[in-house]
Length: 471
Image (cartoon, rainbow, N blue to C red):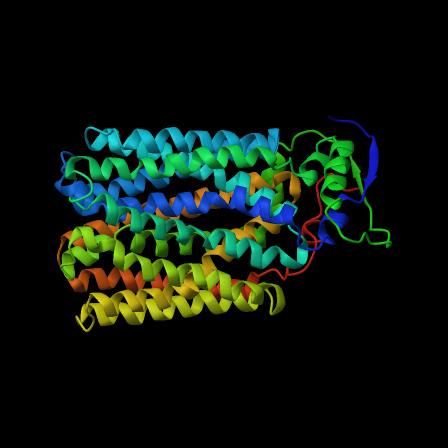
């Protein structure tokens, strides 16, 4: 809709003053499953690397790294395409579509017959997950009250590692020849995510459209009805009159408005978002996509046992955002993002030296990685939180998609392929250079956060970045 008609709404203020309700658990459970699915997918390929090499596909270390890059490239494209559609047609429609794309593609991966079919199906799977990031991050941030937004977003993003744990355990089961024939084990592994997605599609039917999206798309009455439904769960309603926001009816934000917002209105925030997303993407994807190759090549861990080494790593990654998350709402975004990125970077470089000197065995190396990514995981989750909350509501899904896409393209796609090639050299010294580079990038991001960070803790999204429709 376009025109000069204006209206007032108290929807944002009412959503932000809510206590934590059963409704919020529904939102977090039904939508947060995205990160569990992503963690499941990433871990499966890593844990199955030895099985994929020995299977009829005969994938080399370089091809496994390339397949990971295909997955990330698909995620980039999916984020860009579905991100635009999410801002245009709403959160609810797109988080159903993207989950359906993921479901079909991951099952198809299990039917791959050569490297290229495997890579293409991995790209399609990534497209579904990339689209989910934009739709789901938008919806969760727009539903959760301001004082809980930081810890909730970090915990949800950190749940990637719950999926990683499922993937690790699943790989142990499907790779056990006493339980599953070796020719079918790796194929069956990819069906796990599809089965999980089927149940979540049903659960998402009960999650409404984001009232914040509705109010900025000419449908304030629908937004009001949804908030009233949510408020019915309140034991006592506040007598205090919530603050109202004055908006004007407007059409879908154009690509020129998006560019002007990023480059003219908020250039510092744009630089911050790109730095945080790109550095954590390189660090994470480079190391985690080749995690199993390091264990099997340098520590001679049997392929079927890799899953057991991923479990403590996944635990550290999940506990970081879960335990440190509340501090992002109390001590603040700038302090915590700086600290987590800097600690992760320094510890990664130190562990790289230890690896090059062969000081660690498989268990000690796993413990070291678990400690490093306790901090890195909280920082990486905060990167998604940052790019979601510091730009106007009408552009939220597209900005999340853009930063995810650019960050992944700059830091994520090259990482697995580069590290896969470094591992194939068989030289610990060559791999050390990769660890040093990844750690230095994390420290650089900490410095950028000090200079450009935004204190968004406990503030309404509309106060952090006023909507384009605000009068």
